[in-house]
Length: 445
Image (cartoon, rainbow, N blue to C red; front, side, top):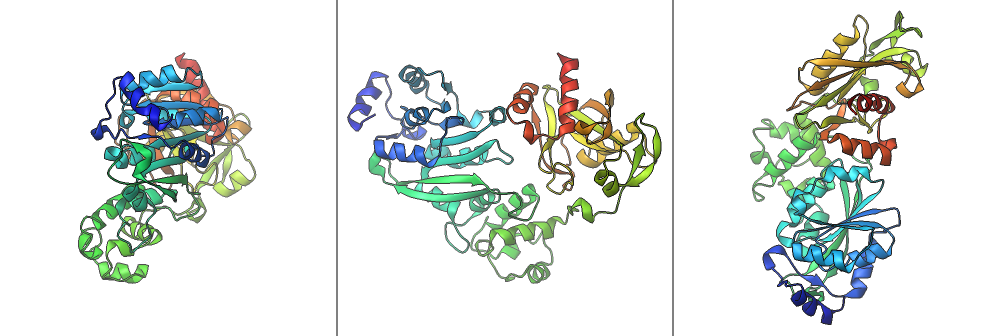
């Protein structure tokens, strides 16, 4: 849409740009095309667009052959978009993007997000749609220039702060270009910038507890002029010893520590037992024959290396809304790291029976107690990693205390979302969970 067309179109649909909603409409056609090109949109992509307005980016995303979900808070603009683009590949949702359920994005194989984020809620939208773990593989966003510089900032600069670190812990941010205010109608009071965000490889940085990291970072930047040690003295009573061990100046301010140093500080404070399984004491598993009769015990490594038949339990925990709790397996697991799995699962150890193991795993992995119902027993096969599996269900609302060595992340998901997710991305799940889920759904349909 040309500059000369924007004002008449807005009058026709009864829209007067509202400053508090960040309604500034992009009119530079070459820039629109360039922005969409930077998102590397392909036909198989599912594109989420936040704040599409008059369809400045929507038009070009649809031209790439992708399916587009446009989330528009203003009903008049949402209705206009439906009329302007009567394409079966476009779905327009009249909704506040801050209330959008991002879990449904897992039901699409490849998701990208584009948008000119309203300045007044940019930070909130960023943190919502960048929540880890995510279904989104790329973000191409136009932001207030000041915010874009904060996302990309390096240590010891005025732009470097809590938001920088919280985003960069899981994502890489590229500052692509500045955008002058003159390409918008009405003209905003500040310039903008375009950034591209992509997920980091999980092996790129050391693991740390995300919640502890964010807590420390926010404390550290709560008063920028103060020395870091004084701001987190409660969390690190002997700050001088910590600084010596971690190799930075005891008088440093928060902005002087790099991302890797903040991760090291988090692990110094947290001191959780998150060592890889190979570094843990060798666990003895029950070994069985094809009739699930005990024939002896063997160390974990030997059982897995030789595909010996053994026993395991899987538990699915539901909340009152009927949503199922799934865990993202720890990066330290020797089998299926960083895949989604049952709420809790584990091997039957020497001297245990299935029911005992189920209750133990509930406590050790999730930090809860709850009545369990045995649903089924799965035969040992390649699909179950050569395990006989007793499968249980239970109910609990949380809160949970996830075992950091076992679990990277936890979350409740609607069962229909899980169904669609498995269909779209089966490779993201541990195989035994898929077998348990199949049985669970057969019993509830």
